[in-house]
Every structure is written in structure tokens, then in C-alpha cells.
Image 1 (cartoon, rainbow, N blue to C red):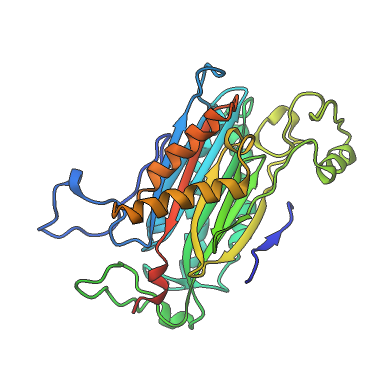
Image 2 (image 1 turned 90 degrees about the vertical axis):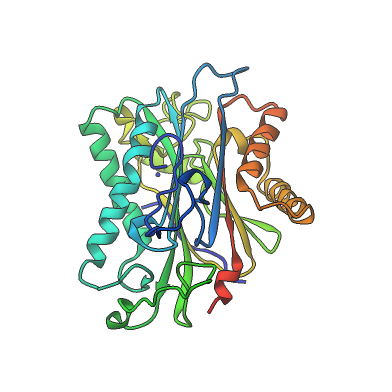
Length: 349
């Protein structure tokens, strides 16, 4: 089993998530309220959040997801942002980060005639795109005056890539009538997942029943992060940078940017039929639930839905995961996003 390729450290469309439908609707489409926003896609997304009013007066988490991201069929963008010292930076990221990533990706593909589906695997390194956009976002946040607050971030992009020659990439055949998926991969296509994070939000993938963490917890208790902060003249006091922040990487926090960097940790993973779902969640969840328990908990929910012949509903799984964190006495806001993969797309023809 191939593990994710990692790059060492070098962050909805709105605050509430939305599925951006870019497919053409025919004249016989059902009313909008009856349409499945994930129809034709090889994934479903569910999100839940809870302020946790027992311990928190405000909700500072923001989440975003976009279907058919970057105007590409069956691509997905998924992100969670956890604000501190206010919500302004988290809100800015929720409203803008996906646009910055899309612009950079499309700029690199403008001359490649990539069509609506797969992109050349060698055209650009998405991990580099993440790095560049996170650095740019930090600059824009400071310029626009949102930098007094800060935000951790966890972002994932699911996309199709091709090993075919560039000239062939524009020749995307439309789906045949009755086909389940809008994008039907060919023998030269592969499904890729790219992730990026700063801070202690976490992304975990469930592969063949086992949990694999795709992010890195940037905390002031981490030895490598302690060394980096000290090398830049900072202090770690009671597991906090300069006695203030418990995390060592974030977006915003302009007043301490020389120590708390926005440069992310990134991974790339090829999705296989063994990959079942993805969990993105804030530290309010991970503080009281382990990666492996969260994956088993969500997997059991999906298994029960199948046994009861119910539709697979990741939103219910996300809601129950948030409630479990509260039941386990988390003291933070809680947000969870579950992305369920349909592995049958990898054998579609």
C-alpha cells in the first residue's frame, strides 16, 4: 500500500458550506430543492458544527467545500478554518482561499487545453500551489487588515490527473446516457488527493479500515517546531509561542508572523478502491477523539446505513462525530467534515 508522499513544512464557498453545481441542467430536471447536489459526482460531503455553548460564547470555525472545483468535472475542494483572537481571518480564508488556489491552478493550465476533466500529472505540483497560495494569503490578510486575528487551516483538493499527452487532454468524451458519473476515467487517469495544513486542524483518510493522518500538528509542544521558533529568536513558555499561542503555524497573526509562519505541511495521495472516506475536523474534535476511533466510528455509521438500506449520508456521520466530541467533554468549538468516496468510479467505463 503506497503511503502519502509528504513535503515537509517550507491553510465553503461561504461560512456555511455549499456545493457549487457547474453541470448543465436539462429541461426535465426536477425542482432545485429536490436535486441531489452530488449527483454525477464520485463523492459526497457532509458537514456539522456546534458552538459548544457550555464552554464557548462564540463560534470561530469556518468551513468550505466546492464541488466541480476550478470548473473541472468531479473535482472537489474541502476546507476547515479555526479562528483565534476573533473570527476575521477564518472568515477571510473561508471566502477567499479557494479562489486563490483556483486562480493559480487555472493559470498553469491555461495553455494546456485540459478540458473539463483530468489535468496533466506533470503540469504543476499542487503542493507547490498550496505553498505559494498560503504565503500569498498571509500577505493579503495583513494588507486587508484582518491579520490581528489568526486561523489554523486544513485544506484538501480531490482531482483527476492524466498521464496522456497534453494534446489528448481536451478530448473529454461526454458521459453516455444512464451513466452514474459525469466524469468517466480512462486507463490513463488517476485520482489524486492533495492536502495542506497549518496549525492543529487535522485531515485523516480511512483506507481499508485503517486511519492515516495526512496533516501535521503544528504545536508549541512539538520538538521540531520548538527548534524552528527558537532559531528565529522566539521563546516557548508553557507550550506557547512567546507565552501566547499554542500553535506554531497559522494564517494571520501578523504581530508574531516572524515566529508563527503560514508555510504549510502538504501531502499527495493517490486514491485507490481501498480508500473509503476523508475526515476533516478541528482540534475540538481531535483533542478528545483519536484518529483510529474517529474512522471506526464513521465507518460503523456508514455500515449501519447500508444494512438498513438507507442512503449513504455523510452529514449524519459528521453530526454524530461532533456530538461524540461534546459528549467526551471537549471545551472547544467543534466542526467535522466527512467526504465519502464512491470507489466504483475507479472501475467505471
